[in-house]
Amino acid sequence: MAWELFDVTRTRHVGDWTKYLPDDLERKSKVLLKLTHIHPLVRTVRVLLTRRRTPEVLGTFAKCLEKLTSVTKLEITHAHTAMTTHLKNAFEGYTFPSIRTAILPAQAHNVLRCCTGVRSVTVNDMNHECSKLITAIGAACPAVEEVVDFHLDTGNNLKSLIKGAPNLRSIHLQHPPSKDTITSLKPFKKLKQLGATKYLKDTRTFTVKDPPVPLTFEAVLKFRDVQDFIVAAGEFLKERGGGRIVIDHRLLDQTSSSPNTQVVLSPYWTHTVSVE
Image (cartoon, rainbow, N blue to C red; front, side, top):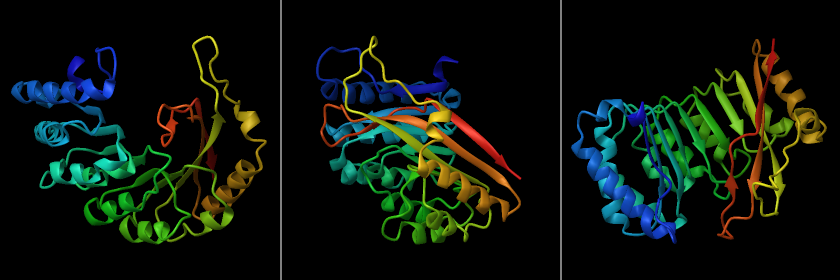
């Protein structure tokens, strides 16, 4: 259905998208606020957030999102690193209990705190350590069962996640973890699925005629870190009666216009191995 997805990540205007996209988000949010008969139809919200006119734009968007009580998936494809305080001010006091899946960058942790019924959390920003997302999960998201693309081998992230989300059933890490990291996951008593991503890094500027060439599953299996991950994950899951190992392959785009931004594209493929 046309209204199942509320998507404001592109603009029809030519030129600087950071100038026009915030206006589009505010305008579309105001329109949707008035269309009350549409509210129950919206299932997914996908937005891109910039710093332009943040109090007005974010305030209107938060008010709109609160009315969409059937939304189960929220995806913030981008939010500027300097927007943390703006997001906190705009979303403070709101709750979105219907959201079950949240995909967002680390600096949107104050938005995650509003998703009190969320079960799956994905961090989609390669450059930002996820400690604040883990803190938000522990403070406000007791139903979380899956985390995706988290860094768990830095600082106290793992200890905090064990404390804040003890009922995790699935963990997917940004890179194939070491055996020691996998062993450290034993406190998650319900954990039955382990996943990791193998990235294709390429600094070329791609075009339609010259697209990136992904590796095959067989080629990815030749990497030592992938081999070690499969062996260690298999041993870990066998000890708890079986489970699944998930490996996916993605492009890490380092050709973004911003030198501080790396864009993680959707997986080329995902391969699942059952462990009995």
